[in-house]
Image 1 (cartoon, rainbow, N blue to C red):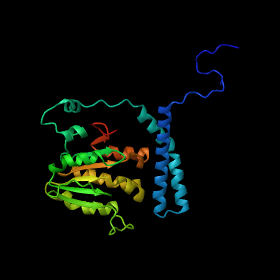
Image 2 (cartoon, one colour):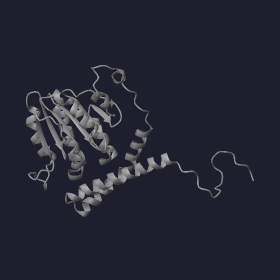
Image 3 (tube, rainbow, N blue to C red):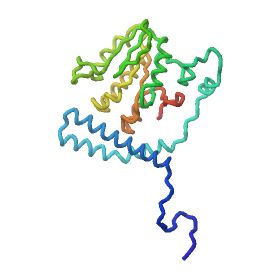
Image 4 (cartoon, rainbow, N blue to C red):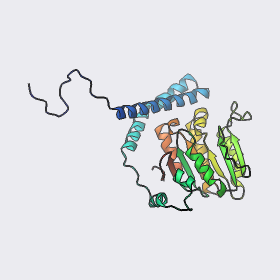
Length: 266
């Protein structure tokens, strides 16, 4: 019998290898994300009255692209971390009255006209902080939300679009097209508006990813062509990897909950 060569191919001796908690948690999180995404998509199709044959075709199409999505996710995890831009490094290190506590907390200055920022977070928290910091840079706000945040600023002109509106055409909620119609006046008014959205996951579940992505693209195009700005909070677990990548490419900046702003992924 030869001695073990340390290559990792020694025969199994009956003892379980030590558990790698970090690996196990990462694997479980990815597994959960995949199941959640698949079930959300299936529920979205079923809720729109798809037939069994249509559901079967959609599921088969989804399975056919699964290998591509997994490889895209693998490559994104292996990519090196993006270095912080010089502006972010200097902003983090400066002191004095010019750097407010709100900016230090969010890591990003107030939004300006024609900017579009996407915040990746499980709950709308950092995006709300950015909204508070940016609200006085625009003559009006437009909030598209399931639970519109209370900014405690009654003097600011605010258009609140609650997506769970009984007056909508889709069983008690507004469609993205109806939301766009209610936003148009604020976007076209002099000085534009700061548009805040935290209802993308709701639209994905009710209308599907394609309709939601078209709505997001319309919003980005509206602010790029005028004086408005767009701030969106969304949970990336609500979308499949390829759809999340398509969404993020629409925006000028991506902000993770605990990281500074960075360019969108290509």
